[in-house]
Image: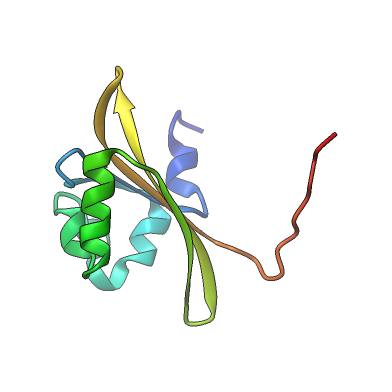
Length: 114
């Protein structure tokens, strides 16, 4: 397995954009999830244009403030956890990453206090 092959084959959809919102990379699962919107052809386009309002404004603010956003969303009976966060190269803000994966139902919850 090559250095980053696990990212391409992950069951999580992973999309990476630069500081201006231009999509740099999408793994195989992200390509499948966003197939109706263009799939791999989205690479090079602006991530903000892929989001309707009010999500576009929220994402723009998150990127400007370099804040993390974590939530779940349900569509067609499938619940996904969405993790959106800034990424950095050599300590400098370089863009945003979105990781999305299906949450099983029911989902076990384990408390490990000890």
